Image 1 (spheres, rainbow, N blue to C red):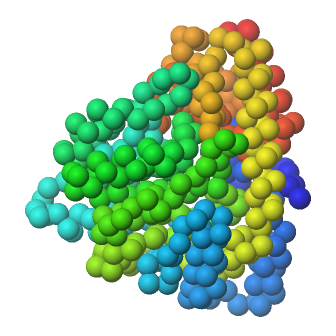
Image 2: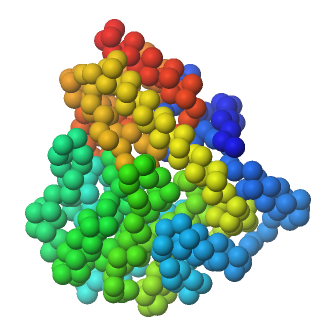
Length: 385
């Protein structure tokens, strides 16, 4: 059963950061629900062992990941020989960039990363911190839905080395269809781009939409890898456990070496047992979570249409993040969010951090009561501004 937890005063980044003081924080992407009971019980058993030293990754973890993606998403072929472990997806992306940089003919050339914008803000920091070059391809809005600009992608792909995919997409909430992914894969194959797919939001697809693993539509195993983690779906991000699927053996060794160099290959023993319990025993909990989050989205959508028609909400297809257009307020998103936090004590993410203007990102993974209160404050703030 889904259980809302008051996280205030628990050293929680979302609720207890200085910028969140006194606010209802619907910003950073983690949830306000207790982890599933099987996860907590597994961690308690590990706690009772009493020793928390360095851990290896047991076969149970490989089996849990492989069985989960095969059963729930039809992605077969994951095994111990093609799965690497690391602390989180963001360090994984950085390590993969480092490994791919060694494959370029000239070490002095920057690795050029093509990705859709707006984009998850850590994509930008990974690209910059690893000395890579960003090649942005802006999504276009058609019929209240963000779409791929195929002409732009085709034009820019020859100028890039890597396509960095977010599947499903943060922050717009698009769940890419199989047809879209197949078309993307064909372009990347034609232009010889490596595809790095971040699929951390894969467990969140709203009714009428389905997550398609990028690996399930690729024929050649030499030109892609996929990052996954149970962290986002099961609210265990602080336990630091993520996976990289690398079907090519040579690249597997190169990425593994990069993880060692960056020292992000040591894992938390609690993260390992939590992942097994998540994938093996917590599917019903996840289904209930998805239903609740979708209900929150529907409430948000209906509230905006009825009470705040000057705003525009796009049909979110997945993730637990809503992307709301505030252009009609004629105020930069950063200024809007700053004032909203200071005057109404509600915290959203401004779109500038994702490379876009006049949007806010709203985290829906909280209780309905918190969402209702935040939206009522939002309505009052806009009316008085």
